[in-house]
Length: 296
Image 1 (cartoon, one colour):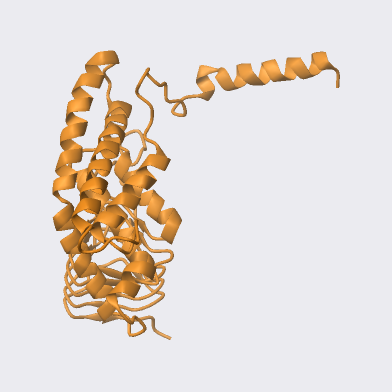
Image 2 (image 1 turned 30 degrees about the horizontal axis):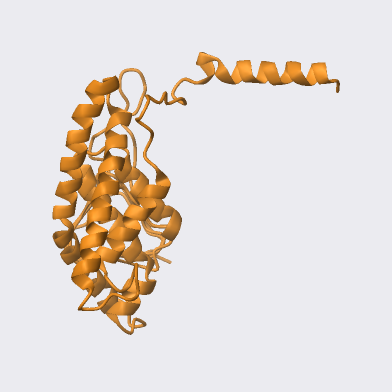
Protein backbone atom coordinates (compact mmCIF):
# COMPACT_ATOMS: atom_id res chain seq x y z
CA UNK A 1 0.00 0.00 0.00
CA UNK A 2 1.37 3.35 -0.99
CA UNK A 3 1.60 6.31 1.34
CA UNK A 4 -1.06 8.04 -0.76
CA UNK A 5 -3.49 5.14 -0.36
CA UNK A 6 -2.80 5.00 3.37
CA UNK A 7 -3.44 8.73 3.79
CA UNK A 8 -6.66 8.47 1.77
CA UNK A 9 -7.98 5.62 3.95
CA UNK A 10 -7.13 7.52 7.13
CA UNK A 11 -8.85 10.68 5.88
CA UNK A 12 -11.98 8.75 4.85
CA UNK A 13 -12.10 6.98 8.20
CA UNK A 14 -11.85 10.27 10.09
CA UNK A 15 -14.62 11.74 7.93
CA UNK A 16 -16.86 8.71 8.55
CA UNK A 17 -16.28 8.77 12.32
CA UNK A 18 -16.89 12.53 12.47
CA UNK A 19 -20.16 12.42 10.52
CA UNK A 20 -23.07 13.67 12.68
CA UNK A 21 -25.31 10.77 11.64
CA UNK A 22 -22.79 8.26 13.08
CA UNK A 23 -22.59 10.11 16.42
CA UNK A 24 -26.26 10.30 17.37
CA UNK A 25 -26.48 9.53 21.10
CA UNK A 26 -22.79 8.63 21.26
CA UNK A 27 -21.07 12.02 21.53
CA UNK A 28 -20.87 14.23 24.61
CA UNK A 29 -19.67 17.71 23.75
CA UNK A 30 -17.56 19.11 26.57
CA UNK A 31 -17.87 22.70 27.64
CA UNK A 32 -14.70 24.35 28.89
CA UNK A 33 -14.11 23.53 32.54
CA UNK A 34 -16.99 21.02 32.72
CA UNK A 35 -15.55 17.52 32.23
CA UNK A 36 -17.37 14.24 32.75
CA UNK A 37 -17.19 12.64 36.22
CA UNK A 38 -13.91 10.79 36.74
CA UNK A 39 -14.04 7.08 37.47
CA UNK A 40 -10.63 7.29 39.10
CA UNK A 41 -11.72 10.08 41.45
CA UNK A 42 -14.96 8.28 42.30
CA UNK A 43 -12.89 5.23 43.22
CA UNK A 44 -10.93 7.42 45.65
CA UNK A 45 -14.20 8.77 47.08
CA UNK A 46 -15.45 5.23 47.73
CA UNK A 47 -12.10 4.27 49.24
CA UNK A 48 -12.37 7.26 51.59
CA UNK A 49 -15.97 6.38 52.43
CA UNK A 50 -15.01 2.83 53.32
CA UNK A 51 -12.19 4.07 55.57
CA UNK A 52 -14.57 6.53 57.27
CA UNK A 53 -17.32 3.97 57.81
CA UNK A 54 -15.00 1.11 58.79
CA UNK A 55 -11.84 2.79 60.17
CA UNK A 56 -8.91 0.46 60.58
CA UNK A 57 -10.24 -2.01 58.01
CA UNK A 58 -9.80 0.26 55.00
CA UNK A 59 -7.38 3.13 54.48
CA UNK A 60 -4.47 3.73 56.87
CA UNK A 61 -3.79 0.73 59.10
CA UNK A 62 -2.11 2.94 61.73
CA UNK A 63 -5.38 4.44 62.95
CA UNK A 64 -6.11 3.97 66.66
CA UNK A 65 -8.30 5.55 69.32
CA UNK A 66 -5.84 8.43 69.78
CA UNK A 67 -5.62 9.27 66.08
CA UNK A 68 -9.14 8.28 64.98
CA UNK A 69 -10.65 11.76 65.17
CA UNK A 70 -7.75 13.22 63.17
CA UNK A 71 -7.94 10.56 60.45
CA UNK A 72 -11.71 10.92 60.19
CA UNK A 73 -11.43 14.71 59.90
CA UNK A 74 -8.81 14.53 57.16
CA UNK A 75 -10.69 11.88 55.21
CA UNK A 76 -14.06 13.61 55.49
CA UNK A 77 -12.61 16.93 54.35
CA UNK A 78 -10.92 15.23 51.39
CA UNK A 79 -14.06 13.28 50.51
CA UNK A 80 -16.20 16.42 50.64
CA UNK A 81 -13.93 18.32 48.26
CA UNK A 82 -13.66 15.46 45.75
CA UNK A 83 -17.37 14.70 45.94
CA UNK A 84 -18.38 18.32 45.38
CA UNK A 85 -16.22 18.42 42.24
CA UNK A 86 -17.66 15.16 40.93
CA UNK A 87 -21.26 16.11 41.69
CA UNK A 88 -20.58 19.36 39.85
CA UNK A 89 -19.41 17.34 36.83
CA UNK A 90 -22.49 15.14 37.02
CA UNK A 91 -24.85 18.10 37.27
CA UNK A 92 -23.18 19.90 34.37
CA UNK A 93 -23.38 16.71 32.30
CA UNK A 94 -27.16 16.79 32.61
CA UNK A 95 -27.59 20.56 32.57
CA UNK A 96 -29.12 22.13 29.46
CA UNK A 97 -27.69 25.53 30.28
CA UNK A 98 -24.36 26.69 28.99
CA UNK A 99 -21.29 28.54 30.12
CA UNK A 100 -21.09 30.45 33.37
CA UNK A 101 -24.85 30.23 34.02
CA UNK A 102 -24.58 26.46 34.38
CA UNK A 103 -21.32 26.64 36.34
CA UNK A 104 -22.64 29.00 39.02
CA UNK A 105 -25.91 27.19 39.64
CA UNK A 106 -24.37 23.72 39.51
CA UNK A 107 -21.43 24.66 41.77
CA UNK A 108 -23.70 25.85 44.58
CA UNK A 109 -25.91 22.76 44.31
CA UNK A 110 -22.87 20.47 44.16
CA UNK A 111 -21.42 21.87 47.39
CA UNK A 112 -24.77 21.62 49.17
CA UNK A 113 -25.26 18.05 47.92
CA UNK A 114 -21.79 16.93 49.00
CA UNK A 115 -22.39 18.47 52.43
CA UNK A 116 -25.74 16.70 52.74
CA UNK A 117 -24.17 13.34 51.84
CA UNK A 118 -21.39 13.83 54.41
CA UNK A 119 -24.06 14.62 57.00
CA UNK A 120 -25.74 11.28 56.27
CA UNK A 121 -22.59 9.18 56.80
CA UNK A 122 -23.41 8.37 60.47
CA UNK A 123 -26.77 6.90 59.43
CA UNK A 124 -25.18 5.07 56.50
CA UNK A 125 -22.67 3.54 58.92
CA UNK A 126 -25.46 2.54 61.32
CA UNK A 127 -27.34 0.76 58.55
CA UNK A 128 -24.19 -0.94 57.24
CA UNK A 129 -23.51 -2.16 60.78
CA UNK A 130 -26.81 -4.05 60.61
CA UNK A 131 -25.77 -5.50 57.25
CA UNK A 132 -22.51 -6.74 58.79
CA UNK A 133 -24.49 -8.30 61.63
CA UNK A 134 -26.84 -10.00 59.17
CA UNK A 135 -23.94 -11.42 57.15
CA UNK A 136 -22.26 -12.71 60.31
CA UNK A 137 -25.40 -14.28 61.75
CA UNK A 138 -26.31 -15.81 58.41
CA UNK A 139 -23.01 -17.58 57.75
CA UNK A 140 -21.78 -20.30 60.11
CA UNK A 141 -18.37 -20.10 58.42
CA UNK A 142 -17.84 -16.50 59.54
CA UNK A 143 -15.57 -16.14 62.56
CA UNK A 144 -15.90 -12.43 63.34
CA UNK A 145 -17.36 -9.12 62.23
CA UNK A 146 -13.84 -8.17 61.14
CA UNK A 147 -13.79 -11.07 58.70
CA UNK A 148 -17.13 -9.96 57.28
CA UNK A 149 -15.93 -6.37 56.78
CA UNK A 150 -12.54 -7.34 55.38
CA UNK A 151 -13.46 -10.23 53.11
CA UNK A 152 -17.13 -10.43 52.17
CA UNK A 153 -18.04 -8.86 48.80
CA UNK A 154 -21.54 -7.98 49.98
CA UNK A 155 -20.16 -5.32 52.34
CA UNK A 156 -18.13 -3.65 49.60
CA UNK A 157 -21.16 -3.72 47.31
CA UNK A 158 -23.45 -2.33 50.00
CA UNK A 159 -21.10 0.55 50.88
CA UNK A 160 -21.24 1.60 47.24
CA UNK A 161 -24.99 1.03 46.99
CA UNK A 162 -25.94 2.88 50.19
CA UNK A 163 -23.83 5.91 49.26
CA UNK A 164 -25.09 5.84 45.67
CA UNK A 165 -28.69 5.53 46.88
CA UNK A 166 -28.34 8.63 49.06
CA UNK A 167 -26.86 10.56 46.13
CA UNK A 168 -29.76 9.33 44.00
CA UNK A 169 -32.30 10.61 46.54
CA UNK A 170 -30.43 13.94 46.55
CA UNK A 171 -31.04 14.24 42.81
CA UNK A 172 -27.50 13.65 41.56
CA UNK A 173 -27.46 12.35 37.97
CA UNK A 174 -25.05 9.78 36.49
CA UNK A 175 -22.69 9.44 39.49
CA UNK A 176 -24.85 7.03 41.55
CA UNK A 177 -24.98 4.62 38.63
CA UNK A 178 -21.22 4.85 38.09
CA UNK A 179 -20.64 4.05 41.77
CA UNK A 180 -22.87 0.96 41.79
CA UNK A 181 -21.36 -0.24 38.52
CA UNK A 182 -17.93 0.06 40.15
CA UNK A 183 -19.16 -2.38 42.81
CA UNK A 184 -20.64 -4.59 40.09
CA UNK A 185 -17.23 -4.85 38.44
CA UNK A 186 -15.51 -5.45 41.79
CA UNK A 187 -17.91 -7.98 43.32
CA UNK A 188 -20.26 -9.29 40.63
CA UNK A 189 -23.22 -7.82 42.57
CA UNK A 190 -25.40 -5.49 40.48
CA UNK A 191 -27.65 -3.22 42.58
CA UNK A 192 -29.33 -0.24 40.96
CA UNK A 193 -28.93 2.89 43.12
CA UNK A 194 -32.67 3.64 42.93
CA UNK A 195 -33.62 0.34 44.61
CA UNK A 196 -34.91 0.63 48.18
CA UNK A 197 -33.30 -1.78 50.66
CA UNK A 198 -33.98 -1.99 54.39
CA UNK A 199 -31.66 -2.82 57.28
CA UNK A 200 -30.08 -6.19 58.13
CA UNK A 201 -29.70 -7.04 54.43
CA UNK A 202 -27.18 -9.57 53.19
CA UNK A 203 -26.20 -11.55 50.12
CA UNK A 204 -24.37 -14.85 50.66
CA UNK A 205 -21.46 -15.32 48.19
CA UNK A 206 -22.99 -12.63 45.97
CA UNK A 207 -21.75 -13.29 42.45
CA UNK A 208 -24.42 -12.79 39.80
CA UNK A 209 -27.04 -11.06 41.94
CA UNK A 210 -29.14 -8.45 40.11
CA UNK A 211 -31.47 -6.01 41.90
CA UNK A 212 -33.50 -3.75 39.61
CA UNK A 213 -34.19 -0.04 39.92
CA UNK A 214 -37.74 -0.19 41.28
CA UNK A 215 -37.18 -3.06 43.73
CA UNK A 216 -38.37 -2.54 47.28
CA UNK A 217 -36.69 -4.83 49.81
CA UNK A 218 -37.71 -4.89 53.47
CA UNK A 219 -35.71 -5.66 56.59
CA UNK A 220 -33.90 -8.89 57.44
CA UNK A 221 -33.85 -10.10 53.84
CA UNK A 222 -31.25 -12.58 52.62
CA UNK A 223 -30.34 -13.41 49.03
CA UNK A 224 -27.95 -16.02 47.71
CA UNK A 225 -25.70 -15.97 44.64
CA UNK A 226 -27.25 -15.72 41.20
CA UNK A 227 -30.59 -14.26 42.34
CA UNK A 228 -32.32 -11.94 39.87
CA UNK A 229 -34.96 -9.46 41.01
CA UNK A 230 -35.92 -8.24 37.57
CA UNK A 231 -38.66 -7.02 35.27
CA UNK A 232 -40.99 -9.38 33.45
CA UNK A 233 -42.06 -7.12 30.60
CA UNK A 234 -41.79 -3.55 29.41
CA UNK A 235 -45.01 -1.68 28.53
CA UNK A 236 -44.55 0.25 25.30
CA UNK A 237 -45.65 3.73 24.33
CA UNK A 238 -47.46 4.67 21.12
CA UNK A 239 -44.16 4.60 19.22
CA UNK A 240 -43.20 1.16 20.48
CA UNK A 241 -40.56 2.32 22.96
CA UNK A 242 -40.39 1.04 26.58
CA UNK A 243 -42.14 3.33 29.08
CA UNK A 244 -39.59 4.37 31.68
CA UNK A 245 -40.04 5.15 35.36
CA UNK A 246 -42.89 2.78 36.16
CA UNK A 247 -42.67 0.16 38.97
CA UNK A 248 -41.66 -3.09 37.29
CA UNK A 249 -39.51 -5.00 39.81
CA UNK A 250 -40.42 -7.17 42.82
CA UNK A 251 -41.32 -6.13 46.36
CA UNK A 252 -39.78 -8.35 49.04
CA UNK A 253 -41.28 -7.86 52.48
CA UNK A 254 -39.42 -8.43 55.77
CA UNK A 255 -37.71 -11.74 56.63
CA UNK A 256 -37.68 -13.12 53.07
CA UNK A 257 -35.01 -15.61 51.94
CA UNK A 258 -34.29 -16.19 48.24
CA UNK A 259 -31.96 -19.09 47.45
CA UNK A 260 -29.35 -19.35 44.71
CA UNK A 261 -30.19 -18.75 41.05
CA UNK A 262 -33.86 -18.01 41.74
CA UNK A 263 -35.47 -15.46 39.41
CA UNK A 264 -38.27 -13.19 40.63
CA UNK A 265 -39.78 -11.11 37.83
CA UNK A 266 -42.28 -8.29 37.60
CA UNK A 267 -44.08 -6.15 40.16
CA UNK A 268 -44.90 -9.13 42.36
CA UNK A 269 -45.06 -9.05 46.14
CA UNK A 270 -43.19 -11.72 48.11
CA UNK A 271 -44.88 -11.70 51.51
CA UNK A 272 -43.23 -11.52 54.89
CA UNK A 273 -41.35 -14.65 55.93
CA UNK A 274 -41.49 -16.30 52.50
CA UNK A 275 -38.81 -18.68 51.27
CA UNK A 276 -38.04 -18.87 47.55
CA UNK A 277 -36.14 -22.03 46.67
CA UNK A 278 -33.16 -22.35 44.37
CA UNK A 279 -33.32 -22.45 40.57
CA UNK A 280 -36.97 -21.44 40.18
CA UNK A 281 -38.92 -18.63 38.53
CA UNK A 282 -41.48 -16.60 40.44
CA UNK A 283 -43.85 -14.36 38.46
CA UNK A 284 -46.83 -14.26 40.84
CA UNK A 285 -47.40 -12.93 44.35
CA UNK A 286 -46.55 -15.15 47.32
CA UNK A 287 -48.65 -15.00 50.47
CA UNK A 288 -46.75 -14.36 53.74
CA UNK A 289 -44.91 -17.32 55.30
CA UNK A 290 -45.19 -19.53 52.25
CA UNK A 291 -42.47 -21.52 50.48
CA UNK A 292 -41.89 -22.23 46.83
CA UNK A 293 -39.46 -24.93 45.73
CA UNK A 294 -38.55 -26.55 42.44
CA UNK A 295 -40.51 -29.75 42.03
CA UNK A 296 -38.63 -32.83 40.85
